[in-house]
Image 1 (tube, rainbow, N blue to C red):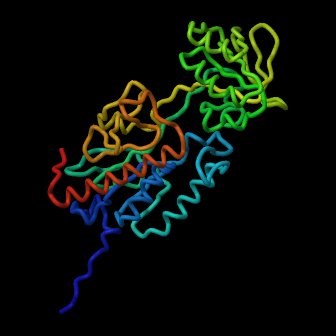
Image 2 (image 1 turned 90 degrees about the vertical axis):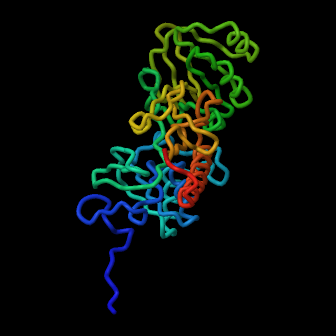
Image 3 (image 1 turned 90 degrees about the horizontal axis):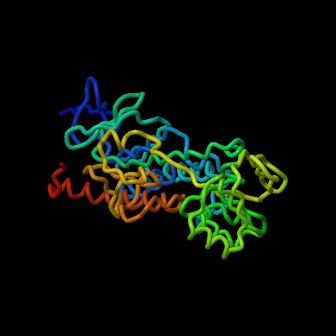
Length: 331
């Protein structure tokens, strides 16, 4: 008796002629985003022999940074090199695929999801969103050119690189005193640039206790200098510093959280539980696009994002097991 010829599950179409909707034709998990959270999620899923697809549109939050820091064994590594190493590791797992392809939509489809791309729809049982956020800098001439090197938003990731030099903190926001206090053991001098804003009494007292200088004039611009950056003001003399800490505003890099109606927090990030589960069953989120409701904002670091990706992947494995056992009925 002849054996019928079949198309392997990995090559069967998910839409159009010959499409099928049973589980073998679908990915177990589609990870949307190829940064540290997405790559780590894929690694964890691959090690459990789950069929996972990573869709990477390119463009990452730490693109402006020459080097990443505060990640054991990777301190001082270029972000692009880190991602290349991650992809090389994923290539050794047969059930993991990475495509340089942007997701265009994520929609529920029965007990799973369809992820749209310019190459067609991809069917999946679960989704991990790891698309990150975009930073918006204060509108100051020259600041964007310095961001990621001389200027940064995270003292943990970039503060040490300004050691022994004067450091400026831009803004009069509620956390300016705390940021200055973090930098006090690092910087040779501290100067706070309020840019015409007013400091509240608590911040003013904290800065005075730190011995920080305060410049209240509006900042007119930044330019690179031999020390780091030269700051110009609407009036008064310029100041030269070795580094600038700046608070950025940020927004979701992709529309999928809003499209899916996920619960968002006041920060604009997706609300998740300790394992990266969102308010929609079957959808997980990892990285700096999401955080617990008990936190005011995400912990924006490569290591933190990778850890969140691992936790989300572990939760995905648990949910897949439960679904296969008929324990969990998707909403």
